[in-house]
Image (cartoon, rainbow, N blue to C red):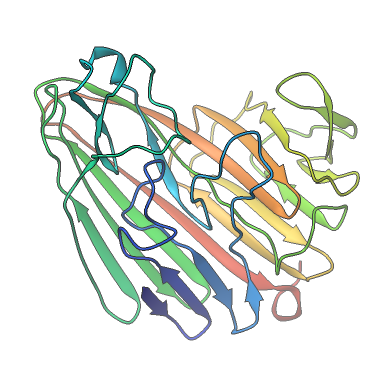
Length: 301
């Protein structure tokens, strides 16, 4: 376990292969499993076990790079899952994010850290003409956590990928309810009404001006897509607060999202800002995420 410290934050990062950072869904570099503010307020949450699919090892601030080259791989051959390794194709099924795969060739990851900084370099294993090298640097300064990331296409083919952070978060483990609010200051005013989820069913989320809150506790999934029309600014920012715990996390993503979702259940809120990128051979892409954690008694809400 890698532990980073500032005067206000403690941040924990399980090493690649160390639980819960030992599955084939989430990127193994810069997997952040715990954030504690002022030695008291905890923000990371576990992916729950009462889902329609088996749990996939998610916790805290864990990222995923989505591509699926399984259709082009031969049975018995391998295809790349960026951020993880080469997955062996054993049947005619596509890659399934919650499936347990054997005989995975993990990408080599070099990493080192100091008291407040950790750097991870994921080297590719060329497969099917694809090779993606990534570097991520995690820093803590005061109550701010940053991740600087870069991806470089070292392969022979174009790489198109979707990347996002799951943000499995709560404020001190508080259950979902009206005390929570997720604000999007750069988006339009949504008004006031209960939301329908991505399947068209009513859920516990309610529009609340330039953001959302909860009508009541829900042990079931509330999953919505957020309208980004009219948004022109980057970085993209959001803020999740809880008026009972009297604390919040405020995040900034350096890119304009291709789309935005909120996934939540029980005591977990996961704002997910997706970026879609196309990298030609030899090209690179850089991005940055910043999270600021604060308590109301040290700053006005």
